[in-house]
Length: 436
Image 1 (tube, rainbow, N blue to C red):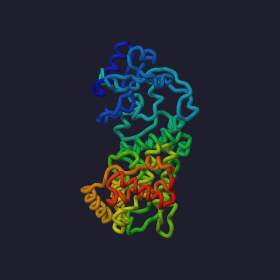
Image 2: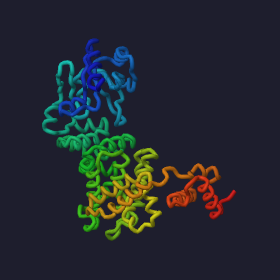
Image 3: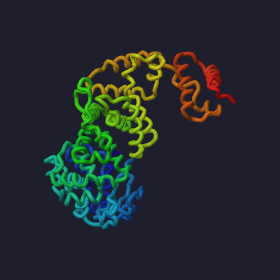
Image 4: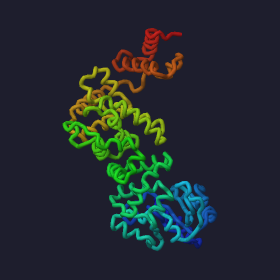
């Protein structure tokens, strides 16, 4: 059963039981824009306990707020009882809620374009806040008094920017004024919620425009101050005719396609070390400083260790192609065999595309990579970290150096089987004075 049909079945079942039920929020906006909704939220006059009685498969994800998750036709739908909200003392959740009617529910929502409802059985749009007019005018406007809407849930400050960027809309003047005045209060929102909003924003094709807009309303300096610090950091006109580090980063984001979040984050942060290493128009070892900053930012955004490791590695190594023609063959082969090499290559291509357009290093490395793929090295290392741990070694710098030496020997063809590799390991340990 497709998503829309399953959602309509829920609405009809609620209506047949005598309860008003409607599609609500973003799905209505998308339908009016001829965009297929990614999900359908349903609002109803039915109380949470009634919803649970009517549907055999439910999850009380937010029953205190009148929200029940209904499983229907292989899909999940949020079914929420019409409500009004009490004070938001934490700037996130209402302290209390009261169940109400359609109008009361609409009035507590964020923006007019998200405040419309739709009855699929009657093919009727219910618009009590002027959402259709704002859609036609391409405007993001707060419902009611903008300061109040933003104070209730301060993440709406970022959501306003996200909707404007994604849809290519302007922000209505009063709404924008409140947004600018309250921008600093985004710091009261948890890092997890900010990171989630950034992820949605930056994995959309409008990512560069979103960053520009975050900067224009004063949010960027609070959510990503390291990116805001790139503004005015001038670069060599020969290599970067596009402008300062901030403009270069935005152009890189524009060149980034539909890719995973960690890669987008690496693109955003690849030059984050430049503002703190700028000296006389040069940025010595900015990639190493950038890797440290990237690690700090990922931790601040509560990213997983997996995401942080990949982002840091890409930032740290994004200048490697520059030295490829001078590398020893074994060093180059090690680079080509890195598990994230292809993402690194794409980062280099984007970096070149967004600057002077010099692809000589990229073309050289990719030619070597094509040859390398024709005669690939063994996929799995003959000796791994577990073998070293079994020999009594603990992970650390020496541990990594030994693994690198074994890997180099394998890539060179010196080691072709596990017995030889284990014997080589014993030689390495003796040379380093590490013996039982």
